[in-house]
Image 1 (spheres, one colour):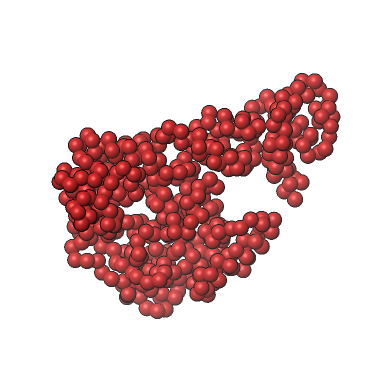
Image 2 (cartoon, helix red, strand yellow):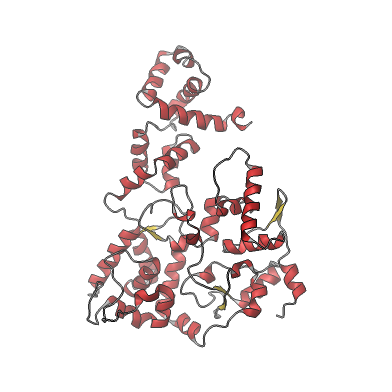
Length: 436
């Protein structure tokens, strides 16, 4: 399909919605966040990313005049396209892959308040130095959507072919190629190396790696890197492979080199798959490995893809000793905000944070924030609201009822400050006065 300049201009000039003076594109499934920002810049005639970030921040401030907190560009971009931050990060950035295995806060969902990864811009972007596209996908996107976009799946490390068309991916280099449409970049793209993509696609170990990679990037929470580390150590011992520094040939790095090939390993895990000048392998599982290295090792040691996936998720979801209590202690502010958001329902707080309900209940009770989800304490909510915000006395808030006074006193004993502030915030958010 020959693309003319007129076709390229019209293909990327399809507005979908307007918000406060800017035209915002609707993100496509699996579209990269940088691609979304590039389409937004082209639709509004912007050429500088810094200017775009200031404009998006201004749009956010105009729509949320009461929000005085500092917002990152990924937050204002998600707001501009009409998505919440957490969903946008999980579906359109590389964070689910780069944070697929985490050492800290591994129980926290990607993009949540307690997740520190999304605040680092590099964690949201691709690990590869170039951008990759499939010519067949570009043609189909232009004919079906009228616009071409960059797919997140094509930017995953180790992906040299399109899973839909089985063709090799073309490579585009530049300062930020995602701000240019794939249709415009196709004429400058480099073709894949001869037989490299075909050999990678036909390699069963690479196929296993790709399946494991696709499974992890769909998860909303990472796995524990320490637990995966121990799991891989056990697999190495079962296969009688050494994973530390050793000079003999019966080593995990030798098995990876025979299974994947040196060129593919160098592209995916870098120099960690090579040998030092002294002949010692660079792969050292005395520390938790990177996500790509762990998946490559599991593709060799795990056998069947489905069994390996289940084993990996089961092992990575196991809490190392002492780690859960540390995560809860470090995220007290997040617990308090979620307690207010879910109106005191402990189970909903636990579900959103990905923690055990018993652990959340223990921590919130220690903070003086009891559960308010039982129907028997519905009256207690009203009494708390009357006492905390209406300025009524203790007896007047309970209408002189001794039983209600006893329940309110029990709830406030020793924990009045946190509970009163939380109840004031949650009821103020849901009341007509708060909405005004």
